[in-house]
Length: 79
Image (cartoon, rainbow, N blue to C red; front, side):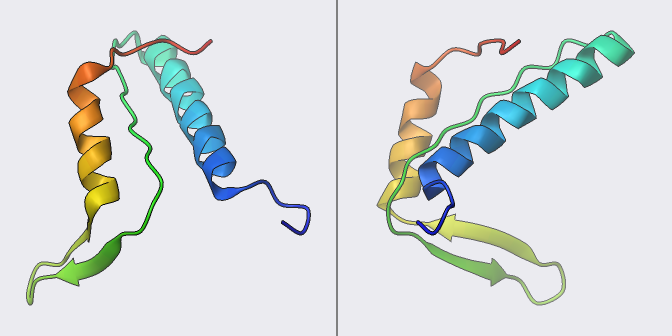
């Protein structure tokens, strides 16, 4: 990997950073936001939709699997 961590590891490190950042915001502003992140690896197709108002989206079995797993997991706090 040329000194770089694999993509899945980088993705999980990003998720951990996002949990920590949300925790800091929650503490600073006395909020109680939760965060749920689904990660699945595999091929996807991505593209921009729209002519006047653009939206970026991804499609594929990898997205479908991640989406299907989301309701089955609970939010947790990473401290």
